[in-house]
Amino acid sequence: MSEQDETLEAIRRKKREELQQTTSGEQSATEPADAPSEPIHIEGPDHFQEFTSKYDVVLADFYADWCGPCKMLEPIVEELAVETDAAMAKVDVDANQALAQQYQVQGVPTMVLFGQGEVAERIVGVRDKEDLQRLIERVQR
Image (cartoon, rainbow, N blue to C red; front, side, top):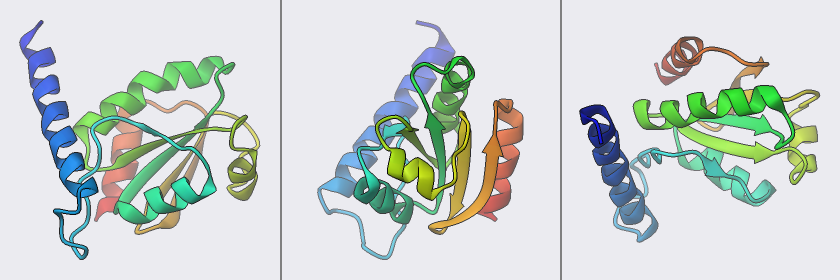
């Protein structure tokens, strides 16, 4: 394992511990939750609502398993989960058609960036990591 891999693994381990503390109720209700270090797969509208309201900044990746560009975007989203304070949500449009319709997803990949639970930006198509980082940073301010 390279030094970079070890560093990423240490970050992931720390984030997992923080997430476990959050889910066990050890964190103050007024303090924002630390974002998970990996994308979280959304299991329905209630889960999505809970997720977007729990974290200050959320990048929701609306994708489909059959979508080639979505597969190209996947490692970028995984890296952003580790490297930024934003939470990453993965929303399968085939399994969550109501959510896709609610957020007017007409093609995949579509990403919706939330700040404080509100839609801040919509991104259609693949973007490079640096573009997405800039958008996240802008919403975090």
